[in-house]
Length: 116
Image (cartoon, rainbow, N blue to C red; front, side):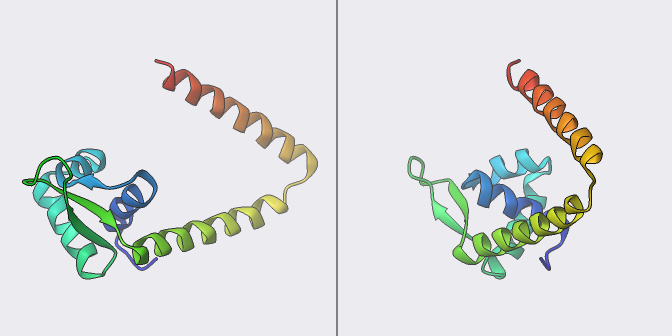
């Protein structure tokens, strides 16, 4: 996508998880606020995010992905899905069955964790 990993990760959170405050985004990304400020500044300069006034507290700002940011993330996702699809197409029946069992197990593990 042409972004450093930290910027791509933060943009992904905003595109697929919705707008966040700077402190909320920093917490999700497990970095300090000054680090997130630099990341957001770079994304904003690239036209991939924008700062918007918070609806309930004018002292806060929401950081939201722009249309360009959303488009970039969806294009990146489509490329990853296509690459994975091509890899999976080469599996034989036995390998696909093994993968089906693994996916089911991962789903169960996720459900257990979510139910805690």
